[in-house]
Length: 470
Image (cartoon, rainbow, N blue to C red):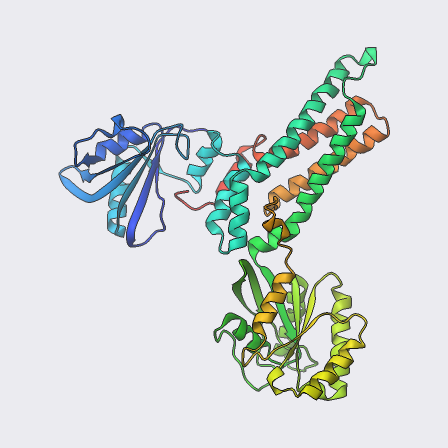
């Protein structure tokens, strides 16, 4: 897949802006840049040092297209590892297109999606997991996802995997050596040390695999379902959390008949709030479809907010029904955190609050309860803080490696399976040749993560998801 031709693309978002950056990379990139550039000091770009800036004009024949600033990066000390030119021009879409078309006529071709980063990988500037982190960094929209992407791009995950692979490879070499002297029945690999290594690798793999549960939701946003009976204030709560009138609010029960979703960043963590149709028995076909969707969204959510109208709970029957519904939800989704929200706190007397709390206290499985007024925005900040407590960000604070990539997660699972096979073989005194096969497969899975083992189809799938110009 290694190509030496020169590629060009717009490295900044398409459309008009103050400044646009056009990137060229390839063996002849600097020469092509020089052929269209006239320095105000008559500099020859091909003779300039790497990592220097030059002011001048882009010239098409006798026509001046724009005054620009050109950055020169000479390989291998560039992002791609190749000669690279970056042209900072004015952000007119006309100017952008005129310069790109000129460069195409001078011998460049349009870059494919992610081709600059692909070349960085192929030229050894990044390993594959770091290259994938570039795309995650570009798409990060909150502090947590940004922090994870930065940690991975700096090689934290790669270094951890590479260290495990190197240690395992050393033992694999000794096992292979034993096979060469099979007739002499000798052992070059210390079985006690090998067992300790397998235990350590197994521990690290399990930690990385477990981190995916946190990393995946942080990367994609933590889905939170707001559920409850009709007309208890679910849409009002969504509007209060987002601080805008996102959902229609009315006194008519069953107003929300479809799910409404929106995102909010709280404490650097992205949350996706889902306002659902009220749960009740109904003959309305459309509302029934909405209620069915509600249960689908509960199934997909990481956290469930069960909302109740505090005024309605003055009726003992309503309070009993609330306990029944809470327990039913907990039994259906035993692993999901559920938070009970008592709405319309501003309309509840002290006596009524005490009655509700006393009744809820009789429930053995009662989850934590928060009192709010969605309409008056009372208690909303307390709710946000409680949501943050559900997210295990300890690993983030400790700068531990967190896995967010499904491909990495799949390879880690397969590697763990192979390591456990090797461990079983070692404990069962299986022959070295059988263990060697499982060790090779574990090494293969480690290599798939960092890119030491690749194929064109894999690289095509990964870099096709990148934006053009990166």
